[in-house]
Image 1 (cartoon, rainbow, N blue to C red):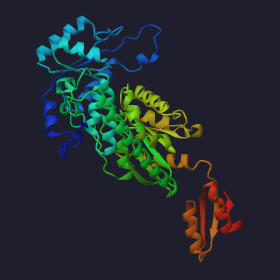
Image 2 (image 1 turned 90 degrees about the vertical axis):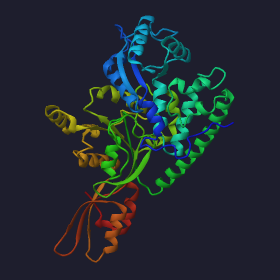
Image 3 (image 1 turned 45 degrees about the vertical axis):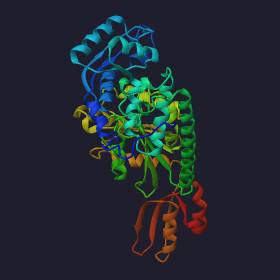
Image 4 (image 1 turned 120 degrees about the horizontal axis):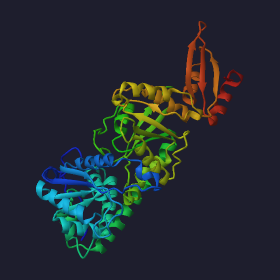
Length: 463
């Protein structure tokens, strides 16, 4: 028996959740605990990059992204995870008292729990337990709209649940805190076993290979145009979709919410001097992104891997901006992208409108300083439009690096020649003389210089 997908017309809310799922989530009183390792003397510096409070705030934000009602949240520093329960017995007793007092029905642990740890915590606390990986998968299940996104989420979900099987799907019912999961495969297929999961995973992987081939054909057709590609990447909720909408005048969903965007969207954008690009909005990154999600969404992220320019959008007003930036760079590195290549990766410091006046002025001066190879970030506000012109100019500068400039005078009668110039290069300046001649300053891709040279000969002069 095949695993079922979402029922037709069951998704009615903006984020892909059915009304019933939203009601279940809103009625689920949830306790959030952050069992974070305490950095020891001499420990890796990465442990102390993000503050425990900021990590807990993010976990609460993730829970809020699927409408859970948070009744209590706390940090639980630990030196070493307990093999059986991750948390110590004293902390488990404290949490049990809080759960009983708050009449909570769900514990969200902001860590990666093993199947054994998850089951033992459920027994000890008497409520359903989900970990960070399960929660992120749930959010992705809510957000997926296209067939590709749905398949990718389901594959990641099945990979995660495969290790949590005992003899059947019975423990995957909503007893364990799943609200969406693509219409609830665990809820409707309780008699399925590990073999059925594996068979389903193989079918999904085959379907995704087809999607990958289709995307490859689309990319090949774009390469023939050819329009350069620019991809937006960044930590979730950094403002990528708002920036995408600002640059393209599109209406992609942009909310102050973690993982508001899941499925990739592309649009054509005109740069200041007429050059056209294809801009791609992608899923947001996050710290401790589940491994199976990185693998499952690799097809989506191919737009990033193949992009001519990558815009790393950062919420510069966030208290954890540096740590978030480091997380994105680490994921880019995992994808085979050199995050330190400033000729290709451009940092965009977004949400300038949320900065205090003094900090805004300081960062404005910092980003305006000259830098070799154009390595300075661009300070913008996607919401107000501040800095957008400078951003477009910076994108154009990267795409046209190595394109020589020329001056050219065209006779008033040579309308065909003027059209050829606009088709072949980018006109940077244009002046019409009293005699009716057109004086141009233009930038030409190296591979097209020969075409203009044959057309205009010595009149084409290097600038």
